[in-house]
Amino acid sequence: MSVHIYSSSEELSRAAAREFAARAKEAIEERGRFAVVLAGGSTPETMYGILARDYIGRIDWSKVYVFFGDERSVPPHHEDSNLKMASEVLLDHVPVANVHRMRGELPPEEAAEAYEEELRTFFQTEDVPRFDLILLGIGDDGHTASLFPWTPALEVQDRWVVANPVPRLNTTRITLTVPVINVARAVIFLVAGEDKAKALRKILEDDADPRAYPATLIQPPGGPQWMLDQSAASLLSEL
Ligand code: 6PG
Image (cartoon, rainbow, N blue to C red; front, side, top):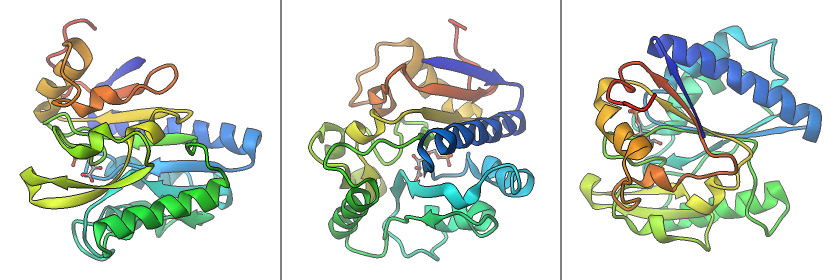
């Protein structure tokens, strides 16, 4: 595990864009393609915008395959759609090889099964698919992707994608499962803002119950990379 703290969310976003580009270059050189999972929510928007603006000619986008860590149960043009957010700030502006979206407009279980099939086809394997990079955020409740506290998806070990009922939001989300995230070659958490400070201290410094703070379940080889702004890191004592 590594933790990097940046002076502002803008600095965090610039550093994350550099990291994305470096991981893309490495994957394309070693494996001929870069299979990356985008995070939803609002925190990554600035980073995606920087990629679209400053990395057009610096990444071989024709070898970049885009996936999503989770999606809301809404159609692609809905304001809550993670696909919509990512398309508007990034995907509509770069010639990616392919965008593998989660079909939020379908019944969630159907969307989850369809996405699992899409992963099986893309990775041509029955083994847990191994992404080159997975980007994640956290909520102020310690959730990540759509792995929310005390929800059934946290226990799932035999699926790659599931429909996860989230009573607190009165909805069902589609999300990658912990086993898929934990075999990724790299996992980067992007966390900005004071509202995340309490959850972050719980996750990074306290022996928090993973059912209450699901982000603690994310333990890929070598541990995740935490990229934080100063506000989010404001309650951390050990750094
Ligand atoms: C989603 C995300 C979710 C997000 C956190 C943080 O679909 O909402 O995948 O896990 O990363 O909720 O969201 P913010 O970046 O908006 O604070």
